[in-house]
Length: 293
Image 1 (cartoon, rainbow, N blue to C red):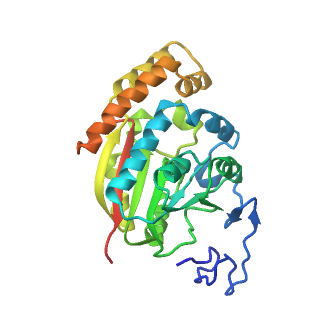
Image 2 (cartoon, rainbow, N blue to C red):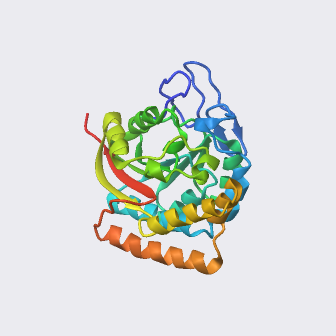
């Protein structure tokens, strides 16, 4: 069911107006505004960064490889899913890929920043978009799958967000989540993205269990590039490059290097698909299911 984000009463009819408390969420440019715009939404992501992100995502090896891994995980673990919400959908790069991969699935995208949703609207053809707070979702026992792709690290109250996601899922519904892994890998890129934390596998799986999930699969990814990534960051620091230059370098690898790295991650993804769970890597993928209550 759908619920009012203000009073939590069940909503009736097709719209988002609440007869219980009188809330009437505005709709602007097709986006339903279910929470007020936040200047520092969920720990922050520089609004000026969305334009740069929008320009980079479609060609950068990391975003492209992550898209392929996410789509595989959704299809492999939840093949009967008919509805999915991506929280923190940003500029819509993942959601657009899911539209193409799952043409029969009803898709929703939620994002705290209206500026990001403006970019997402240019990429999407049929997904419904909401300006919302992941800590106060408008669904209860409703969705087959929720995706949170590099979102939780921005949320100070990540356990509250996970509990809210769990409540939005139908019993047996699934969560696919990716996060940056290994606190010792903290870098200028984390600071630039306003991350609150990097995760350990134990930390994230424990938080999922407390929120009401059972974990079905956990694997690192970007594992094959872990040592080169560490070496590159160390060498950049020793060379005296500024923090801005180091971050820019990671976002703009040379074309040949970018293609080679995407190919390497393709091989890694094949290993994950074959059942190998990688113990270490720059990122962590976890597939979980709402536990029976």
